[in-house]
Structure formats: structure tokens, C-alpha cells
Amino acid sequence: MHIFVINSGSSSLKYQLFQWPHEQPLCRGLIERIGQAEGQLTHSALGPDGQERTLTRTEPIADHRAGLQQALDLLMDPEIGVIQSPNEVAVVGHRAVHGGEEFREPTLVTAAVKAKIRELFALAPLHNPANLLGMEVAEQLFPQARQVAVFDTAFHSTLPPRAYRFALPERLYTEHGLRAYGFHGTSHKFVCDEARRHLGRPEARVITVHLGNGCSMAATEAGRSVDTSMGFGPMNGLVMGTRAGDTDQAVIFHLVEQLGYSLAQVKELLNKESGMLGLTGHTDMRDVTRQLEAGDARARLAYDLYAYRIKKYLGAFLAALNGAEAIVFTGGVGENDARVRRLACENLDFLGIRLDEEQNQRRAPGLRDLSAPGARVPVLVIPTNEELEIARQCAGLVGC
Ligand SMILES: Nc1ncnc2c1ncn2[C@@H]1O[C@H](COP(=O)(O)OP(=O)(O)O)[C@@H](O)[C@H]1O
Ligand SMILES: CC(=O)OP(=O)(O)O
Ligand SMILES: [Mg+2]
Image (cartoon, rainbow, N blue to C red; front, side, top):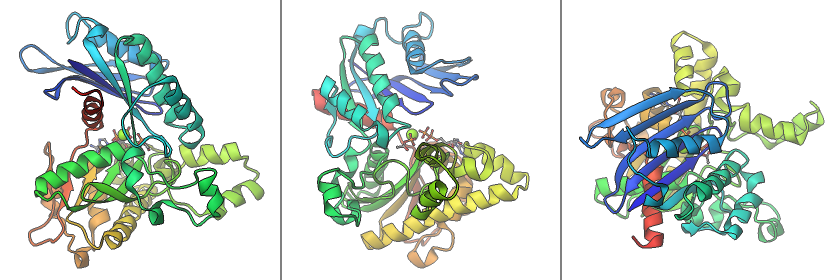
């Protein structure tokens, strides 16, 4: 049977089709810059000879519906296709970002589940609308399949109250759910499990550092999340592509009261105009690298700030866990950007963290250990695979 997984983001969409129970990816794709002038689709499919073939298209992709329709057409393409009919897909798994306190497990998508995801739009405005749209389009394109939602927040449902409560009046938690939820849980869980398997220590304390467009860290113990850098919505903590991460709350009052911002403008500023974009004019870390290598001082400061924030959370989480058996970097930046890893881990030798710079610079697929000989805490790079983790959780739910 086949499981199709959709990971919809604000302006991008990733997908993979798996043959189950072999966990065999038959094809995968990435659709970027949805709704912008220059849309880009990259689709790779396994041919009958076992070789992967990749096709790229650069053309406007109006919305998520158009993107998913293109993906489905490619799945069934006479040349590069891997299935003949949408009916061959038994399950469609969806990444859903904010599930509040309600969803701690993979969940069959029903009208009530969709209504709850809609209720949480305000808390995850870049993500939940795209996730819901993905579900609605998939219901039309794969009408016979079971639709399953896997929530980013679910992995963090094990946080203890001291980590998830804010020091605000209690009723704001009990009546209105104001608390930290945490995000990227599917990715944190996937790489945490991989690290524990690699170490041969299921009880290990692992700090996972997910650096993609959105960035967050998790402190985990025996595969359970005990603290994380994101909170009520996916905005705080680390510096991200367009999100500021931790800022002083007084900034918001100053923006509104002194500088005349409306609340909608503050939201736009903190979600879409800040982070690396606000500091350098670029969202994509590869562009920031180019800027840095051309000697730009703003890019240097942005890198410093980005890495220093990671270092501060490393310190905090090492204290929370009383040490760690591994630190894992993952996500597009975490897997590929040696400079970020070097800056975040430098001068931490007093904690037993020391990178081998040659290993850090080396490019290789799969899990890599970057630590210098004699370092106490292994620093690993583990490529994340949210789609595979979602497929596994879907299979667990529907029992296949
Ligand atoms: N080779 C690379 N070097 C540095 N950054 C990279 C590289 N490849 C990808 N990235 C960065 O990864 C980020 C996207 O990561 P990804 O995990 O795909 O994000 P998301 O899933 O949140 O869309 C972008 O900022 C991109 O610049
Ligand atoms: C929750 C979140 O920030 O997700 P992403 O990194 O996909 O934007
Ligand atoms: Mg991502």
C-alpha cells in the first residue's frame, strides 16, 4: 500500500510517497515560492531501474491547490509516474503545526479536527492555514484515502508544567490555554530517536537543534521532550528566516504606543519581516553566507546573533538536563551550514563540547559525528525526515 505525506508550509510544500510497510520512498518533491512570480517545483522519482530521476520546473504556482494538483499529476505521469490512480494511495498524512493541548497523538482528519485547526489559525498564522488547505485539497484529490494529521505540538505534550507554564495569572492558563506548546516536534522526535539508536542508549539525554526556515531546540530525556525554545506560537526562541525569536516584550509596547504600529503590523513585523531578513535583507541562509563572504558587516552580525542564541539555549538545556549524551543539528541550515555549527559550539570546551573542524566542514549524507577526539558530548548532524516520521505515525494509527 501507499502513504502520501504532505508537509505544507507558508510558501512551500514538501511531499513524499512511500510504499508501506517497506518505508520505501517512491518519489518526493519540493514546491517553493507558492504564490510568487517565480514558483519552483523539484520532483524526484524512483525509476524501474532503481535510479532516481529528478525534474525541475520554474513557473508561477498560484496556490497550494495548484501545487498539489501538479504533484498528483507527476505521481501519475506516464513517463516519471509511480502510480496509475489516486486510489492506490490508502493514507494521506499531513503535517499540522499547532494542535493546542488537544492533539497528542496522530489523528484522523474529521470536520471537528479541521475546525480545531482553524481555531488555532491566530496562533500559527504562517502554518495552520496552509496545513488545513492541504487537507481540504487532499480530500478532493484522494477521496478514498484516510487523511491523518500529525501535529508538531504532539511531541512536546510531555513537557512538565515548570517548562510549559508562563508566570501569568493562573486563569489565563486554565481558561484560555496560555502556555508553551512547542513546535517542530515531528523533526525533534525523528532525530532524537535516530541519535538514541546510534548511541545504543535509549535513556540518553539529547539536545536537538532544528534549524530550517523556522528554528527551535528541544531538551529530551529518554525520547521525551522536557523543554523547548518555542512557546505559545512558533515565534519565540531562536532567530529564524523571517521571525525574530526572543525579543523584549517592551519592544511591542514601544512599537504600538510610541511608533504608531497597529497590532496587525507588529504581528507582520515579528513573523515576516524580522530574523535574518530583518538583519540582512535575506531569508535564505545561502544568500546570507554569500553576503558574509563578500565582507558584509550586517551579515557577520546576523550570523553572530543567530549562533549566539543557539549557544544560550544549549547552556540552558544542558543545565535543565544536568548534561547530555548528544547534541544534534538538523534542518536545512543545521545539516548544511558548518559556520553556524562552529559559532554555536565554540568556547564550550568546559562543557565537554569540542568540534573537529575538518569533520564539521565535510559534506556527506546521513548521520555524522563532528566531535573532536576526547570531547565528552558528541555533536551529531542527523538529516531530518519529517515525512517519514509522519508516515510511520500514520501507519501506527491505521494499523498497517
Ligand atoms: N547548503 C546550505 N547551506 C546553508 N543553508 C542551507 C543550505 N541548504 C539549505 N539551507 C537553508 O535551509 C533553510 C531551509 O531549511 P528547511 O529545513 O528546508 O526549512 P523548512 O522546512 O522550514 O522550509 C534555508 O534557509 C536554506 O538557506
Ligand atoms: C513551526 C515552524 O516554524 O515550522 P517551519 O520551520 O516549517 O516554518
Ligand atoms: Mg521544515
